[in-house]
Amino acid sequence: MSDTTLAKAEFDTESDISDYIALLKPRVMILVVFTALVGIIAAPIEVHPFTILVSIIFIALGGGASGALNMWYESDIDSLMRRTRNRPIPTGKITGDEAKAFGFALAGISVLMLGLSANWFAAALLVFTIFFYVVIYTIWLKRWTPQNIVIGGAAGAFPPMIGWAVATSGISVESVLMFSLIFLWTPPHFWALALFIRDDYEKASVPMLTVTHGRRSTRNHIFFYTISLALFALFTSFTSLGGWVYLGTALVLNSLFIAMAFNIWVRGDHEAEEDNFSVERRFFRYSLVYLFLQFGSILVDRGLGTNFSWGLL
Amino acid sequence: MNFGVEHELHKRRMSKNIGIGVVLVTFVALIFGLTVVKVTDGDVSSAIAGAASSE
Image (cartoon, chains in turn yellow, blue):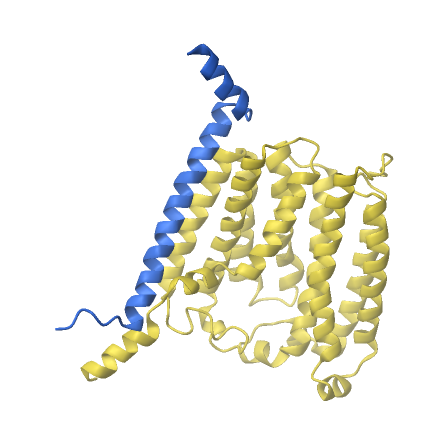
């Protein structure tokens, strides 16, 4: 190899700050930050705004650490999938070892700082979340079972629980309800994605439901899980977490979600391929809006004082 | 040898250096702010007023 090609190789693989930011999965981080913030603000104990800021930053960094460790472990399959092949490790911008060290360092710092800024119970929950995402989901479930995102979805459901723990140093019915809402939302969200990138998962030998049981079965699963989610979200309206704004939002959001899931259910593969899975893509995008608005309504009820004083739970 | 020409490579390294700098300064600011909030029990203005009146 000549000096020129060596220099070009070094230039092509030299990372910049954006590659390290990409390792943290910033889009997932937005979800983590928002739901954790709802958890803190919805809690009955007031927390100093600066403590909220610091706690949210380190919960987000803990989520980012999970993302970096996930990318380290999955770099082999990331390079095979169109959706992920431009991530920093497959492109050679960051080595696997660098990502691993970065992930572990961030995990340590975020847990320590959350313990110091809030309390050690919240920090312990953050440790468990990172462990669950990296070890249970990434290393164990993802390549083993089509139930990977059903069980693994718990990792993404912990942030509001951590937020609640920042304020209360504990767990309560409300934080379990917020956890369950995200837990039930995760499967239809990811199965919609799996419908339109099924071939990627097959190429990478990831046993997503679309690969192991086919798209027909996945459509059935999406429809019935969406109904379960909608029933649970409506039930939550009548608990101590609910309120007038939550109830109104839940009615609108869940009616739309069921209608969109129904459209996915009745479609065949031929029809979907003809319009490049437009219905499935719309469902996937809508699911993100759904979660933000549903959690946002909890905040609005708290802000306006429109919570129901008579919760079933 | 000409050191004046800045290569894209140097810009990328510079972006990392600036990034680390910003992170460190932010970290120090967070620790300082958190210390003030904890020491004053969240009531920063009363603590400052109390300190001023005792002087």
